[in-house]
Image 1 (cartoon, protein in one colour):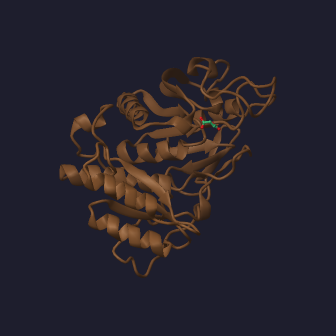
Image 2 (spheres, rainbow, N blue to C red; image 1 turned 45 degrees about the horizontal axis):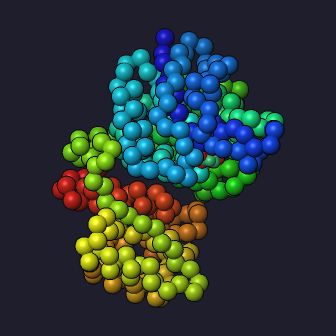
Image 3 (spheres, rainbow, N blue to C red; image 1 turned 45 degrees about the vertical axis):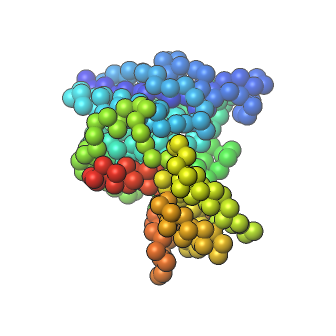
Length: 324
Ligand code: SIN
């Protein structure tokens, strides 16, 4: 007998309310994970166990919840009879949670995040099928790594992003496409499973506890009519020693990582004043290929929210003299 642990964090999949049967105007994160599991059967011989880690609208996701989630994943995946973990999550930041876990949990077992675009009280909710599909992936003996399952598609944590505010198949992995599909409980893989973190990050154990001192990284955007003023203000705060001032900034850049000239000048000033600056393309797909970096690194194929996580982790490692 294998177990799959379903960790609940809220989201539309656990949402209810609004007009009877409506798809919008509900409250996310109201239904306990134990109720989401009622009537859901996984593949044969699979024992399902639910655990509530959080109950929130994922737009309000915070580092503390990521750390709790990470701790529960590490705990459960270490048990020999646990085949994998499923996480029920809101769609809005699921890609960030997936990338955080993919960057910080070393396991050969699957961590499968799933979600819904319609609340549980909709006329035709999509959550139960997505949850059922996620269980099929978690129970697949070949499955490994952190993936997002939604609308019958399996996406890897690195490339997945929410690309539609309403449609049931709201996720895209850009040029890469889905890693595979779930059809009638069967996994059909078209790419390999995502690569795994080779070893547990060698950061001090206290870093993984809620309330630990993580660097603050903000995201700004380069756009027509930009002023660079916010970047200067953030660098001013850092120089003035303001509590919790930023250590890093990700700039969602135009096209192939280009910056408005005033943003570029502000970015160079910020760097000189000790703020780490990382560029991510705001295109939503593809990989930045800059022949001339002008001394400012880019995040390759990571979007800005994931580049923010990568920069937080890099700064953390830098300050502790270690690496991921
Ligand atoms: C959320 O992200 O928690 C709300 C939206 C959703 O799950 O679709």
